[in-house]
Image (cartoon, rainbow, N blue to C red; front, side):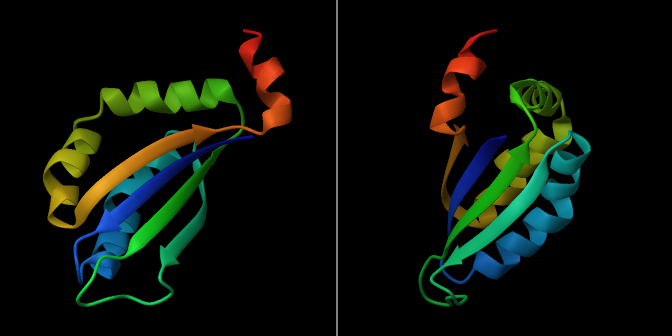
Length: 112
């Protein structure tokens, strides 16, 4: 398994609205590209009105090929571009994305 982790810091008071928009407008496309949303976590454990929330949105891919396939499909998708460049900025202060694999799988993953 490989995991893609979106770490989002929302604008104060915008955490819940961001998550609702993400689930309605972005997540279905990611699922269509073969990824599965396995965790949706919020810090702190309440929606804040006057401070940012931090969200970890963790996607699972079956193997490295499915990660690259999903990335390739997303790069050519105008809806993905609009989401992250036009829609998401009204909700977020920052975003980081990481792709992770179990340490014991790295040797096999590097052997391509």
